[in-house]
Image 1 (cartoon, rainbow, N blue to C red):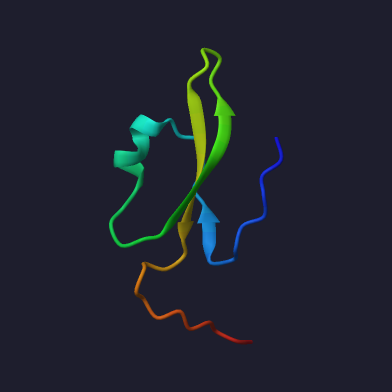
Image 2: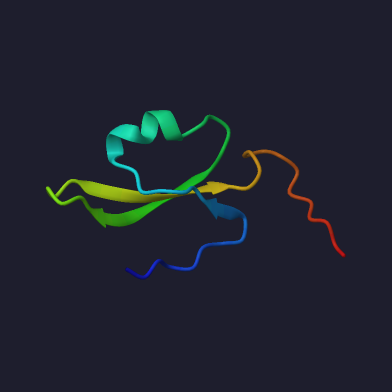
Length: 65
């Protein structure tokens, strides 16, 4: 499986998630990208979840070397 490139402001959360786990995975205040991650052996869809590095509304200042 090839995953698309994602903006540097998002990090991939480890694992693949079924839709019913979203309530335990997603937190208020962050932005998310959710992409197709394949299927289980019995055909249930799985998803790859990317979360914003900083909470939504936070200062997006980057440290420069």
